[in-house]
Length: 185
Image (cartoon, rainbow, N blue to C red; front, side, top):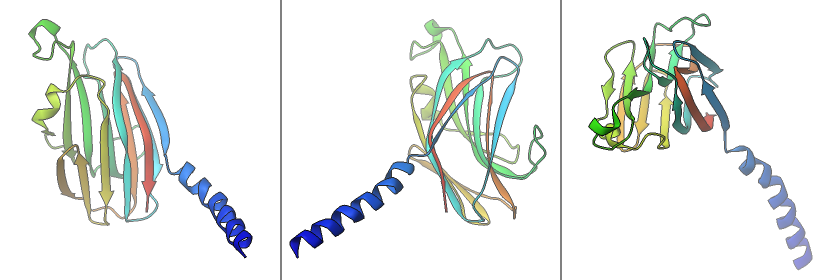
C-alpha cells in the first residue's frame, strides 16, 4: 500500500512539473538603433488579465532626436506601427548625461513613469537615483475597465475603455530587455 502511495506521488509530481517550468514567461530583447523603434503586440487572453515580468536597460544608442525608451501598455488595437488611441501602462526612459554632473556618477539617468492616453507621464522621482541597468519588476492588470500598474512600491489605476485589448511592448534608441514576461488570466 505504501508503494502505491509513492507511485501516485511520483506520478503527480511529474505531471505537475511542466506547469512550474512554463510559468517563467518569455524573454524579449528589444534592441533598436538611434531614431528607430520596435514593437511587439501580444494578444490578450480576454478582458481580465495580468502581465508580469521585469524590464532592464542594457544600452542606449547615440541620442540625437529621440530619447531611448521602453514601454509596456495595455492598449486598444491599432494598425502595426501606429500608436493606439487608448492605452495605459509605463515607460522607462534613459537620458544620457555628463557623469560628473550626475549625483549617481552614472552617464545615464533612468526615469520610470506611468503613462496613459498620451498625457504627460507621471514620473517616479525615486527612479531617477537608481543605477542604470537595474532590473525593474512590474505588474500590469486589466479588469475590463481599468488598468492597474505596479512599479516598485508605487501603484496607479487608470480607466481604459476598450473591449479588445492587446499588450503592447515598444522600445526606441537602445536595448531594453524584458524577462519573465507572462500574461495570465
